[in-house]
Length: 224
Image (spheres, rainbow, N blue to C red):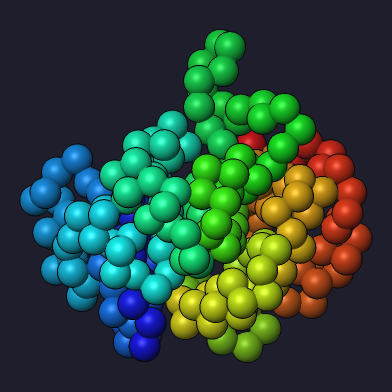
């Protein structure tokens, strides 16, 4: 059993809380604009409602699952970079925000979204995961078996974090496949407009796709 602090009470964070509590992990949920909503999520998922600071302090693994524009506020509520030092942090976010003409994928100046967030708490071991598939699809696909089991891509530069992420992804009901490091030439393929983003993969096809894409600049032609 691992003690996991989830910062963010939306659909993705709620799914993860439900999946991992069902697998026997000790789950804390936090960071909602509505205390009543947070309490309902905790009751529904078998987790505990706490503050973001408590989730960061008590969690062995921290999951950041908020809209891109709220990441800084979520990290501040958790206690900032010092509160995450030495922790494994799983980042489910995607770089969506205001763009000319509306709302879309932000230009991060050649960096991956994962790199941008990791720089905000550099003493944590960051993992990018649970970001490629919609919340609704994750909810319906979790727990499939055999050749129909769905892949959950992840990326990290830490061996320890990789092992922890693989365990949690399996416990959540998916097949973990690593895309590489947090560099844009690796993780960028599982971020918006990357070839791995928004698509259902199974093990063998996922391994072949990562082998083909790893170390290359994302083409930018995948799903936004």
